[in-house]
Length: 176
Picture 1 (tube, rainbow, N blue to C red):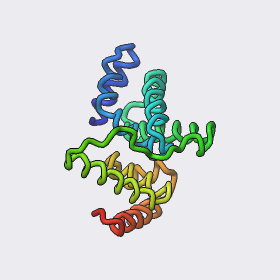
Picture 2 (cartoon, one colour):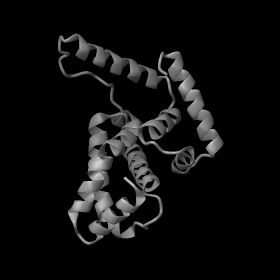
Picture 3 (tube, rainbow, N blue to C red):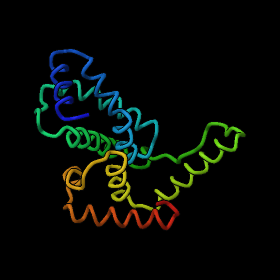
Picture 4 (cartoon, rainbow, N blue to C red):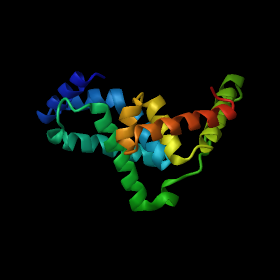
């Protein structure tokens, strides 16, 4: 979604039109979930915080400044909500062991997808929290290093260095 379209959606929300929120939700729900999940590491908690994010976005529509770069705005908001959750409930309660609760179908293609997902999750566990967040923001969020630097409140050189280190760790696990 372009900045102008996002700004237009926020204007709709200020006017009480829920269509603006629906458009933003459609484009960004998955992204916001992935940002939050990268921090809280719990599917259920990430879903709850993501839902709360869109409620808060609706409530704060009046305070949004148009032309301020919406991707950084929503990323910072989602990240802060996830960090607040961790502070409130602690890392132990927020974290969960990723378990496959569904029965694995016998079709080999599905089995391979599950194995690949488990391998990727194991590879991501080799990264520290900061590296995992940077990879998530760069790849899933498609943010620039400058935007990630602002979101994480770290110098851009540090962000790029951590990104390269994270990629090297993932390559050692067999991911390109």
